[in-house]
Length: 233
Image 1: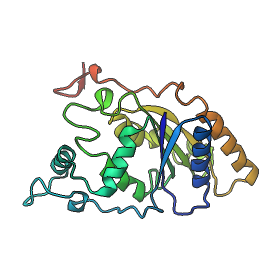
Image 2: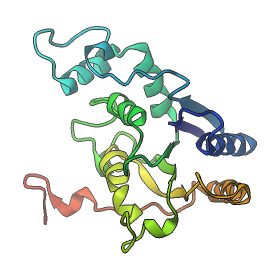
Image 3: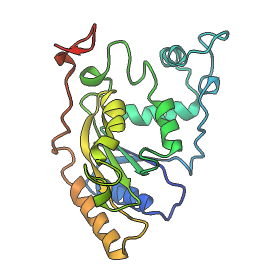
Image 4: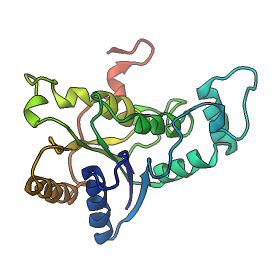
């Protein structure tokens, strides 16, 4: 299997990077191939526009989906995006590693999604959700939080974490076809003890040990909807 780990944390000595390295070493030990994208180390360009492409479908009016389709059909993505697309499309498991930031991903990871999850390449033309380009592949969010788990429940101060992550799990990853594995969360890592951090790393390895056999999260299927009105049948 080929594993693709995308890490979004500026500090190389951070716990997020420790989690990414734990996953890398574990999967390599199991005989899998691991590729990584360390977005800050790569100096990932967060801007998205005509610079994404080597040539243009329409130089008079910019429409991103049309430009993405043209770039995909004609191999016209810039080198930065082309390399990431190759990693994405050839991998069996995608892991996004990040600190929860304003109830979402850091801006650098959001820009990576915006640019790499390109129309034509990862979705579009009837390929979405159950029929997505990446259907049959798996995706996992591994994240850290600033607060304890008690803050992320239905009655917690921040609300239920599953609902907070719905836009990522369903609206992004499931949208392009991935089977979504329940996220792995390391709670309150900015204040927890070294012993607790070591336990999180050990628990993460255990969690990854049967990642390809774990049940995926359940989401509505396309065949439940009238695709003309998008209402339940």
